[in-house]
Image (cartoon, rainbow, N blue to C red; front, side, top):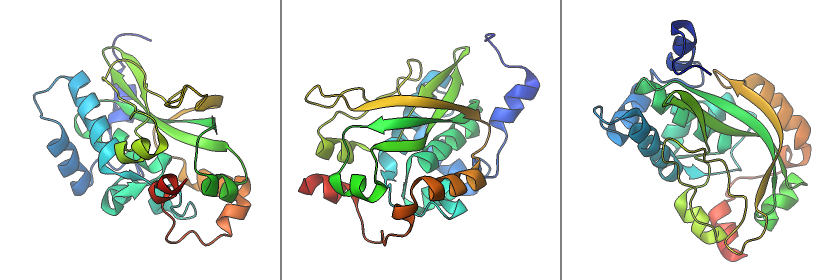
Length: 226
């Protein structure tokens, strides 16, 4: 890819979207508080990443049947979200600072999750896992702000860091050197979250989980109890 994006393409990835709603006042406030305006794009991308990673708790038990689980401002208001919602918030925060950002999706095989979550899902394959791509230093960089530091501690892995330059997807190994996550199938990138499609897809992929009462479930508590 060229060192710069065309004006049209740049606007596609810096203007607000329906779900990457970077014009929402709370998102703007969050992004401006998390990274100084005079920092470099690389430093902003790194600081915003950490703010989303640790400021929003990972919650795989959110309802995937409501569009608000996919909307950046709603995830920010809730203080928790699953991978797609957190990726949307990170993309939105980057757009506030004029950094082109988009969401990407892949099927991920997760070899280390809580047993209760695995039983609910009926699989260790996470379909349409969401991550973020940011355009910094002339190239798209991949980053996944999914797992907050406190959850990582309970799962026995170090938090995934992003320096704003080198790709930071998901840990290939856990703290004991065992296989942790593997990207199985790449679904590409989008300028906004395809929420209506994802709601239908999640209902198909995890029909048992969608019929289960998930209220009160907490992955950090489950991880600590293992």
